Image (cartoon, helix red, strand yellow):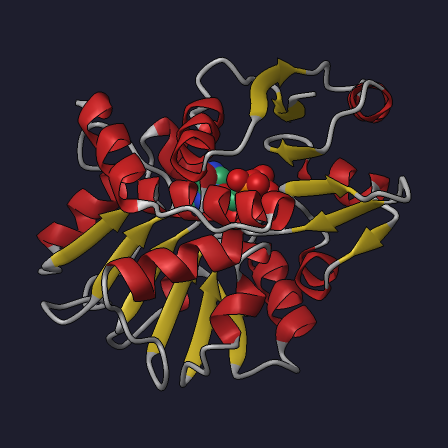
Amino acid sequence: MTDLYAVMGNPIAHSKSPQIHTAFAEQTEQSLLYSAMLVPTDGFDEAVSQFFRRGGKGLNVTVPFKQDAWRYADEHSTRAQRAQAVNTLIRQDDGQVLADNTDGVGLLRDLTDNHGVELRHKRILILGAGGAVRGVLQPLLEQQPAEVVIANRTVAKAQALAHDFDDLGRVSGCGFEALSGLFDVVINGTSASLVGELPPLPAGLVDGHSVCYDMMYSAETTVFNLWAQQQGAVITLDGLGMLVEQAAEAFALWRGVRPATRDVLEALRAALK
Ligand code: ATR
């Protein structure tokens, strides 16, 4: 029987996950069916239970259900437990549901493997303190940067998030106006970019050596990356690579085989234009 997988979210129509996982399955000769499921905002638990009752093997979870998925699971990886939000559920043979969060490792693989960005001993700025940022902090801090600064519109959220992770490295939280000095890497994890907005950032945070990474992607250069280029950044990356890499990690967890990502990423990039 063909193994069933799906991504659940709301909205879900524009999800690229079915395309990505179908390409991975073809490449690795795995027999599986991966679909996108629109789930009512108050119907996540029921939808997941039903999916697994029907024999589903694993799920990806996206906005707005990442915390619901964390609550739903019976067991959690340490990074999922830290993030308190998950993008991957795995139904094990004994029926227990294991949760993992592959967003952070997806971001890291894109930065370090695909683009050769070194994070050790670097000064890193992260914009935003919501679920997307929470999901990537542990893998980032494991790279042993010199410092991670989390800047957010709601300062208390940045400080609380920094406090939750400060046993893993030097991490602090502040408002945008308090930012100063150059950063080696700046990562935009605010949802402001989804609506084409930009946090009010002071000048002088990036120069030609800084790597700027927008966790969102679009056909055109994102608002954040435009800002970064205007500030002198030469390397500006968007989140399409992270999307493909987090999917590859999830696929590996489900199927025990890690697909190659380059061709899939190139095909997605070409289709965006
Ligand atoms: P996600 O799961 O995408 O992280 P979230 O948990 O709702 O979504 O978090 C959204 C993040 O984007 C928050 O850091 C939010 O700032 P606040 O904590 O102050 O709300 C940030 N954000 C959203 N719109 C923004 C805007 N217009 N300017 C700056 N930051 C914004």
